[in-house]
Length: 195
Image 1 (cartoon, rainbow, N blue to C red):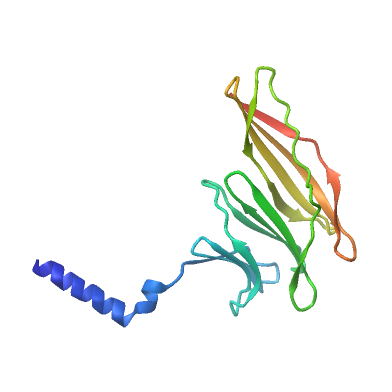
Image 2: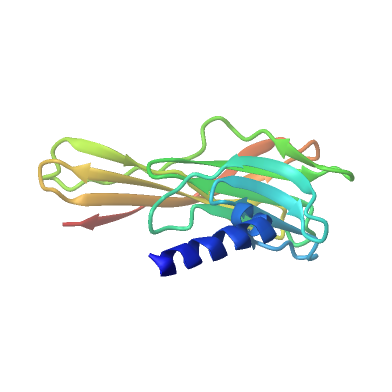
């Protein structure tokens, strides 16, 4: 009992002397821009922000983090000049992509086409009915041409055979001088079937 009282006294003293350590939010900083000025900050695995690294100033509030167990859920893809950035936020069955352009004083979000390309899966003959396990687009890289390359995936379960079918395709978005986005190139779907 005496040892417990001593432990609790020390714990209370530490909390009173250093309260900010008990209240401090956990931060993760990653995806540093090529010029080293900007980065992605995730606070307590929830809040996602594009920040100026040196000052911590929030440049863009990217919202809440989606989570997908076992996979990277947030990704930031920078252009070489650090003036364009694409953000991918993945969840268990879906995701979202947003693109931002530097206008000289801040990053402005660019509207993307409402319907982005998605894979057309080739199902085995014994597949039967299918259950959609979801999928989403993910930004991959900015090309020298200024286009953004993305990957789109989709996973389906064949109820008849129990096979899992995953389709993936790559496509690019082009941006005009006013930053209007359009789908430019769409590759072929690659399908994998796991029995």
